[in-house]
Amino acid sequence: MSHSIIKLSILFLGAVVLIFLNRMVNDAFAPLSIHLSVIGLLAIFPALYLPLGQGFLCVILIGLFWDTPLPYSALPFLLLDFTIIAFIKHRIRRQDYLQCSVIALIGNFFILLFLALFNSKSSFFHFNYWLRIFTDILLSEIMILICCYWFFNFQKTLLDTFVKNKEEEEFL
Image (cartoon, rainbow, N blue to C red; front, top):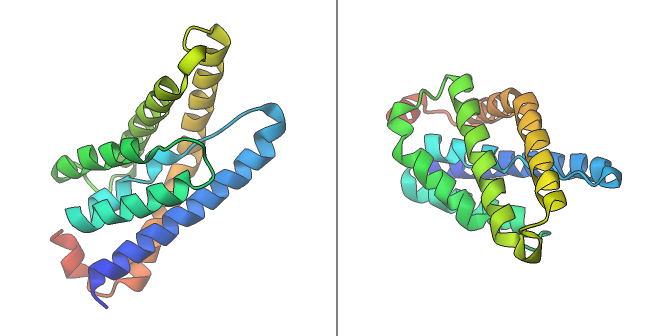
């Protein structure tokens, strides 16, 4: 099995773990009508550690897994986030988790804002709708700040454990 297929599988499975944890947190906050989303974290590692085609495939799989229980599709916005990160990845230091965290926060903010705009329909002009959306976005950003270092270290540890050829990874 090639290293890139192994990396694709590892990054997908790491994202699946994050999605399950996010769904468990959302189940706990359901009585408060709070919906948290960490979708901004899901496109960073495939964009930085995989070639463009395989990263695109990985993000499609992640997006399909993310969208399964939801009545809307975040996949186009996740792919847009992936594409932007992939085109600027030569300017991003992969080891600098603060820089990756800021990129995740910006991506998460815009993905959730675009989802709110496209799904608002008749609620577009209601203040309570936007108050809830921006509350969810703010709490989602705080959640990303709390879990991003864990997730980055988790993904990096999985890659270091299962990918044996580290020289190939440096030249990607």
